[in-house]
Length: 479
RNA sequence: GCCCCCAUCGUCUAGAGGCCUAGGACACAGCCCUUUCAAGGCUGCGGCGGGGAUUCGAAUUCCCCUGGGGGCACCA
Image 1 (cartoon, rainbow, N blue to C red):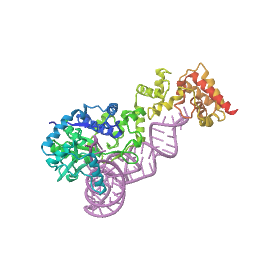
Image 2: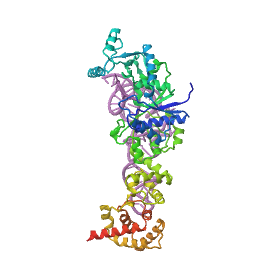
Image 3: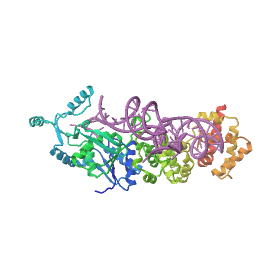
Image 4: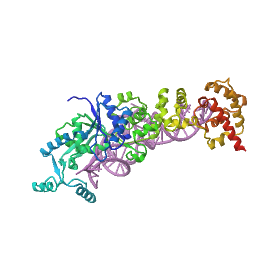
């Protein structure tokens, strides 16, 4: 009726929202936002065996987290069975669909036989020409029929796909697929068509694994007398082995990335780049994405998902985070790691965020970067060997203890740095020879957040305690 | 077996006949900065799958081959 853009994301709730689904949702969302259109969420729950409520929640949670807000829905296909039945009856009445009494077992047998003969496994239409008496016989045996679509066997069906271009299919290759199962639940190819029509969908944007389903749907649109929407089939997302991305390739659930400490804006930005590009640009804000996105610019070829690039990008977005926000985002990770997050005051966590921000590539990394603040030092043997056991280390540490014990010293990183640099001058050693032993003494390892800030955050008492402990450790080793 | 799609650095991509000596990003390597690790800066490594055709000229157009992917369910 109008030419507004109406698109939908239509996942089947048989599992969590995965990377591929998220990308499809994103492109639909971007397209809708770009044109000021409507984005609809539709749950395709006609597979009663595999659909779960938990999956629906996971999908909704993931999309909300990603910021992909829908304007209508979520709608469920199982809520409108009557509507499908209505259209089935219509087709039945028009002779465009027919009842089929073949049992799943028989069909399976014939499919195998066809495959064995190296033939295309298509339905042989034996129920299309059932005589009234045969039909009665089937009914008498109590077989519940499925409804098959009487597919045209001549002519061609042309899809003008926005991303793939013109794709031609010969109708003779389509078979009489099942529209309605024996239990009255519609199958995918039928339900999508009715729904996309009923919801007045203008553009069907989905993965290109559906491209070969499209002619089946188009002939159905025609049989039902519906207008055919525009199609845009997005390239697949592949794993490193170039096969379709799946659990085999490790984390694919959006929720898993959220839990690992990826930021939604990073995931969105990364996903946008899978199958789409805009000049030389790599980093995009959501507004830029909405503004610059177009289906015409979507590429045709499949893309390999690269976790390394995602992680890099996540680091970029973490560095852009306001410090308050980062502070709050970090806390759950510390808590989940069993670290006592009430151990320090709020200002302390904020400072921790400041000194770790540019080192974080995932929020979960905060644990490894700061765990030594929360419990006794665990000295890495290698660090002890390489740094603490070096000649001069004990003497240095003793001097450091002396300096830090001085109550005249205000315990702030800047003051600490000034005094310790003074020490470096005094002993005439390379800075590294002084600072590394301190680092190992108070953190137990050779790698840590910036030293002076770390000392400050640890506090005078704990720092001195750890320096003493390190000295003790060296003595023990010597003896 | 049948049908369909795809093909630029290792990966994501820019490129819509001369602007390409093929650009950017990630990854990798080196250097610089530096108390470690990062971050940042600089440099380097690295690609148009093959063959024909069209054209004065092809990464860009056409055909074939090869290679990859997807589909062929009472799954979606």
